[in-house]
Length: 251
Image 1: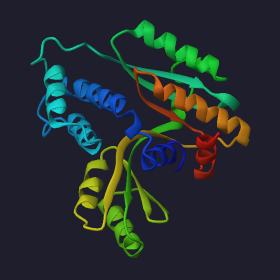
Image 2: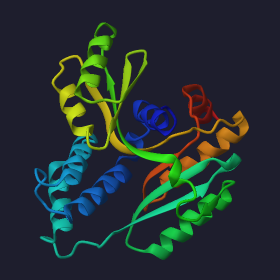
Image 3: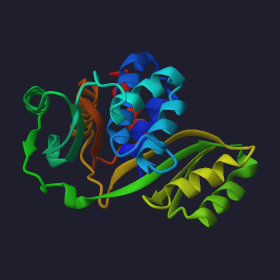
Image 4: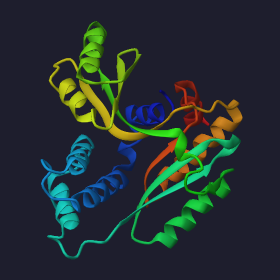
């Protein structure tokens, strides 16, 4: 289970998110606003609890988090009304894409997403065209010392992780949607673990392997979509390796 998760992890480790911290805070705020519509108490609202945790992981100030909750719950009547929209499409070489957006203007967002696909060798597709190949799972990326890898891996599995990947000192845990929180809480209790990233993602059941030229074009489309203001998350079934991302960043 590599793919988009590896892309996200590598970008995070290289500090790419820090360079776009303002945009990151905007995306985190939008997710909190949407989640808070289902209730402002994080103890009773799992989606809000996860959104707040992600905001804290991204070093979002507490005042920003509180304001976002109030906007979503209706306490702040001046809050903008965002709508969730999911797009499906194909990238270079027939790679599959799912694009999740939060927008206050559906027409603007649709036009921007369509333009981004067409300018980068892809095209939008009908709902259901590619989503059948993706499954909702939790992804938790941690860093630990080499002596603790086996112990941490076993602890994660005992807590409910369904798969574990190890690369050097980095360990990625995959969970079901329902088991995500239990695994994260288990890992948080270890003094040797530093959680780098924890997200609910759409993971492909089958990854697409294309030649390097096409793969680099696909990464360009992925990056361009992620840079759109209304886009929250982008998922692809491209088989992304560390070497591929390094070459893309050096191009």
